[in-house]
Length: 323
Ligand SMILES: [Fe+2]
Image 1 (cartoon, rainbow, N blue to C red):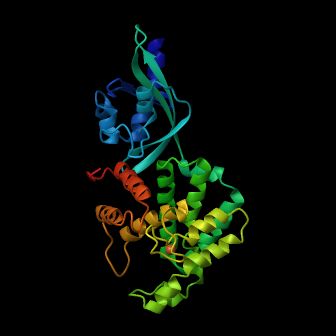
Image 2: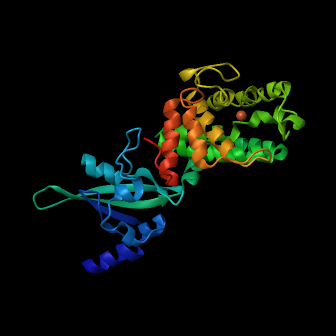
Image 3: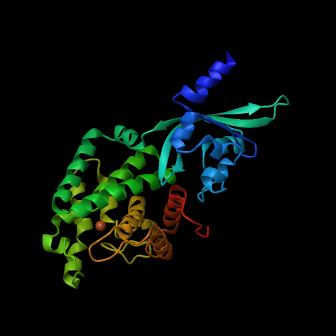
């Protein structure tokens, strides 16, 4: 009977199961979990989960444990319905996990076992957002897309980066949704910028640049008229401020700049640098990361830029970054 139950768990259940010993070595992983992680069982069994998924680290730079199993083994606390993400093939996959401690006959902790269900983060996010608000935001995104397809695609990429960064920074669920929406509409004010300036392929004149710099205020003024959008309007108004106070439109500095705007500054710049434009080649991810780090503390909030780099580091399995 036990064998039959084990066979179901191993091969047929839709739930992922993973078990580690005290040295974080994987002693069991079932087929569902392997499929989700796109890896063979042999890649995990007998290897340290820290090495396979988290480059040997138990915690992120911001001090959070990398996964619920690691946390359970470290703290002795079993966890229930813990949202977690794992970096897999250049993507973060999201799971809901429960963890359990298994003891030996002496009552000492021997293993930590986890069950995992994969979740669609975007679907969950949309369910948590007010549907009316989301449809307004989508209409804005479509409106900007009708004039400027680059800005629409860029905004969607920035929104996804914002979402991942917010999750990585462990912001509250409500804030994660607001951060995502801020990304979608951050450049909505470009609707008010004349076509010949918006899509000019070459360098802008000083006068044209001054006009472009109006877009954060134009966007924020549009959003300010919608009840419940005050925080998003604020994020949009200040997304071109710089941490050192040399940005626009109000030359705010440090934490005077709203949190979502400081996050936008990093995600916006990263996506812009790594996108192909007709007047320059895109930066590689490594080059863009170098640039973000170079501007950390001047253009960007140093804590947020480091969290962003770290998030990419685990997600994309990029080389050492001198942590
Ligand atoms: Fe912008």
